[in-house]
Length: 189
Figure (tube, rainbow, N blue to C red):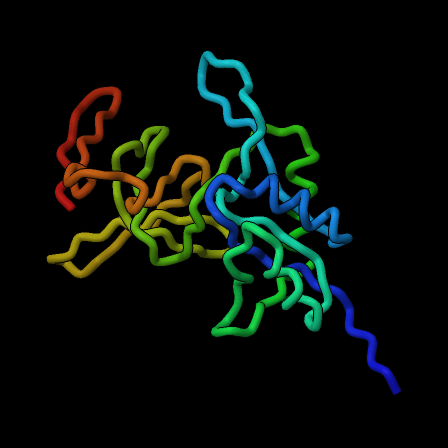
């Protein structure tokens, strides 16, 4: 009896600045492709042309047996996976991306942050404070530690007010000056 395998989404790593061309070629070959695009904007500027949300990557839906044919498309470097085995992406992840893109809400790429990553608060009354990202009862928490005491305090924070310290350059990310409305405090990390 012939087994019919369901098609899955796969992430494709492509040559720099060739995402749109590769998506077109895949479409011409009959594959279901998905290239998430967005319009980057900055304060005081008009929306520019659409650019890939994930530069260097696009998605393609195929059966696991046919993924070998995908890599013959010009511009494709490889299919992401574990070792040499392509790793399928959950349909719900692609559906979530498509929903967010079609919502009309402003969006931008953001680094993936995991509990335990060092973060910097970029907005609000805690701006400039560095700590460790934690998750407790489904909410993002900033964990600020006093190493010599071996004690910490956790405070709930809005996700939009944090940045990964990996995104920041320079040695000034180790310690930041936090200015409150009435006083200035030097935070030594």
